[in-house]
Image (cartoon, rainbow, N blue to C red; front, side, top):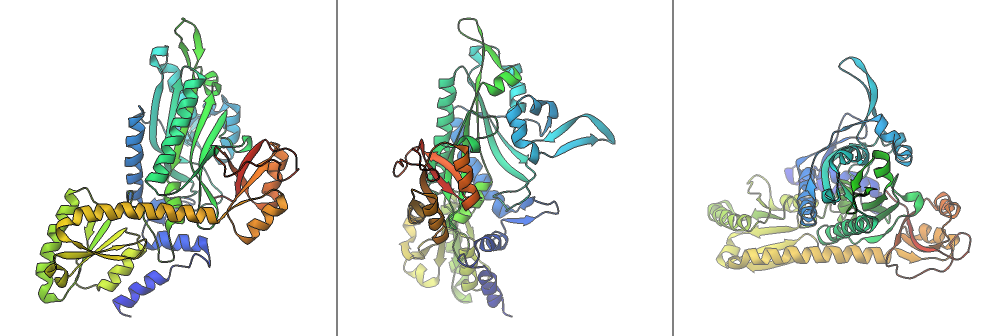
Length: 485
C-alpha cells in the first residue's frame, strides 16, 4: 500500500457523524492524537495536541479572571473526611463519586482522605483562618487543578474519572456583592465560550434538582452538540452563608459586629475540549476554533525538486513574519510525503488555515490560503500576508459561530405537552422549550419518559410558556429540556 493510500485510509476510517456520532467522536480524537487511554479505568492521557488546546483555554480564561480582580493559588489534593461532614448537602451530593485514601506508608490513616472532587470545603477551612475583618473582603481566588469523580460511564474529555479544571472560590461581605460576583463570572464564561470557542450558549438558572450540591442557586451556560445533546459548558454558584456557617468563615463588619461571609464558586473544565469538537467537527475530522487551535496556519511548500530551495527559502521568510505577529504556525516541508496527503492530514486535524506556496505563486508574488471551514481558496499578496491571515482567522471564527448557532436554531423546538416533546425528540434530538410548574414530580416524569433533563431556566427564552408540559397547571418557569452528556 502506498503512503498516499495509507493517508487516505487514515482519514476515511472516521465513522460518519450520521452513522454513529459517538464513534465519530472517538475516531476523531484518537486519529488527531488529542488523547490516548491510560491503564486506569476512566482516565485519559492528554497528548500534546490535546493539551495545547487546554493551555490556550487556560491562557484566555486566566487573563479574564485576573482582569476581574482574581488571583491564582493552589490547594491540597487530599481533603479530610470530616470536612465533607460539615455541609450535609455537599457530602450527600458527592459521596457516590468519592475515592478515598485509607492508608499510606504501610499504615492505616486515622481519618480517611478524599481525593479532591471539588474544593469548597478546603477553601472554606482556609478562609476561616484568613478572613477577620471586612477589610479582608472580597477575597477572590481561583485554582487551576485536577479533580477526581469516580464516573461509572466515561467519555474522553466530556466525562472522565480524573479531569482538569479551574475552580474559583470567593468570599463577600453580603448577599448583593456575592450575587454580583456569581453573575459576573457567568458572563465571563459566556463571553469566553462564544467569542473564543465560537459556541453559542443559553444562559440561565438551574432547577433545584440540578443545583450544585450545597448551593443556594446555580447558574449555567448550555451548549448544543451536533447530535442534539447538551453539554453544560460552565457553572457559577451562589452559596449563601451555608459554607461560611459550616466552616466558621466570619468577619468583623463596619459596625464592629461578627458576620458570616457570603461565598461563591464557579468552574469550567476540560469538557470544553469535548464540546468544541462535537459542536464544530465534521465528517472530515476536527474543525478547530482559531483562538484556541494549537496550530492556526500550516504552511505547505509545493513544487518540483528543482524549485524546492527557492520555495523553502521564501517559506521560511513568511513563517518568521507570521510567527513574529503572534500567529501559531508550522511548516510541513517533508519531501517524501505528497501535498495531497498533507492536505487530508491537516484537514482531519482541523487546522483553520492551510497556506500553499509554489514556484508559480512566487512568480506572481502571492500564495494561496485555504479555509478549513468553507474550503474556499484565496490568492493573497505575499507583502500583505500577515493582515490577510489575521482577517481570515477572524472570518473563520464568525463563520463557525454562525454555523453552530444556525444548527442550534434548527434543532430547537417549542412544545406545550409531554407528548409533543416526546414526538419532537423522536424526530430530531435537540433542545425543547417548555413550561414547568415547578414540581419535582413533573420534572422527574420528563426524565423518566424521554431521557431529557432540565438544562436551565433561560434568562431570555425565545418565548414564555404558560402551562406545564406534564400536568397542564400554570407554568412558573420556562425551561430548556434536552438529553445531555
